[in-house]
Length: 474
Ligand SMILES: [Zn+2]
Image (tube, rainbow, N blue to C red; front, side, top):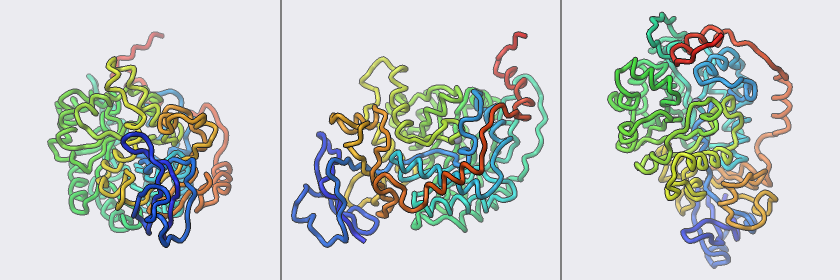
C-alpha cells in the first residue's frame, strides 16, 4: 500500500513548508515541494493535506493503563498513600485491562501520540493473561505499544522510609525468581517489534525492588536488547528511602549496578541533585517528565531545565490516569513546558513550543532506542504520523500552528493518524475499533461513587506522617 499526503504544512528550520509526503508500506519515501514531478507517482490514493499540519507522532512515554478505572476518584494524597488506595481497588478482571488499554490508546492517539509505554499493573496469578489482554487491545486499535510489565518483589509498606522506627514487612506475594521467570515467558510470547508490540523490563523502582530483581532485568534486557524502564525519585520519601537503603542516592545506586544506559527511560526524576544529573547525562538515560501527575500527587517540580542544559534527553508522559486524571498528551506537553518558567528567571532556558514538540516525538523515540526509526519527518523513517486540522476553532485565527498547538487548548484537532503506515484515525475518528461500544462497556462496568475507604491508607498513614515530619495537632 502506498499513499500521498498532498499540500500539507510541515515544520522546517525557518518556519513551515508546504510539501507532498509519499508513504510506501510502513515508511516515508519522499518529502518534496508540493506538485513536484516526484509527487505524481503510483500511489494507491491521496490524502488532502491542505490547511493541515503534519507532525511525527508523540510518545506517551509513561502510563499505567488500568488506572483508568480509578480516574477522578482518589482524593488528594501523596504518592505513597495514593498508591495504597490505588492497590486496594485495582481492577482484577482481564476484560477491564483490555478495555482500559483501549481507552488509554484512544486518548493517546487523539492527542497526537502514536506510541504508548504502558507500565502495566499485573493481576496476581494472571500475569501472562494481563499482558495478553493489553497486547490484544493495542494490536486491535493499532497503536505502537511498549509494555513494561510492572514488577516488584517487596511489599508496598517497604516503599516508605523507616525513619527511627523498626518495622517488619511481610514478604511480597511473588518471589524474585518467579517474577523473572514470568518476565522470560512474557518476552517469549509477546515481544514482537515488527508487529508493533515491544516488551520492556520495568521494575517499578528502587523503592520496591531488590538488587536481584534489577540484576535479572538487566540480564534479560541485554540478552534480548530490550529497553529498560522504572520510576525514579518521584517523591521526597523515595530520596530518603534510597539513603536508608543504600547510603547513597538512587541514581548512584542504579549506575553502580549497571541499570542506566541509552535504552533506559526513567519516569519522574523529581528529586535528583547535580551529581545525579551528571550521571544521567553520562549514561545517556532518558527522563520521562509527567508534570500533571507530579502536581496531582504533590511530588514536586522535576528540574527539567537543568536536565536539558546538562544534555539529558527528556520526553513526556501522562502517567496513569488515576494520577492525572486523563491521557491527553497535548495537555502534558503544555504543562510540562510552561511549569519551568516559574523555576528559572533566565527565559533563554525556557522550553519553546518547537522544542516541546521535539521532546515529545524525537525525545520519546530516543528513549526507546528508536531514534533512527521514529520521531521525525524524514525520508526512510517509519510512517508514524499525525495530521492536525488547522481550521479547527481552537487553532484559529491563523498564527504559528505549533505555538498554538502547544500553548493553546487544542480540542479535537487530530484529523488523521498513521502508525507504521496504517491509518488508525481518520476524520478525527478511531478507525479500527468501535468507540461507541467502548464507551458503553466503560459505562456499564463502572458506577458513580464517592467516599470509598482504603484500609491500607488507614494502616500506613500515621507512619507516613511521622516519618515525613508531618505533625498532627489534635
Ligand atoms: Zn508511574
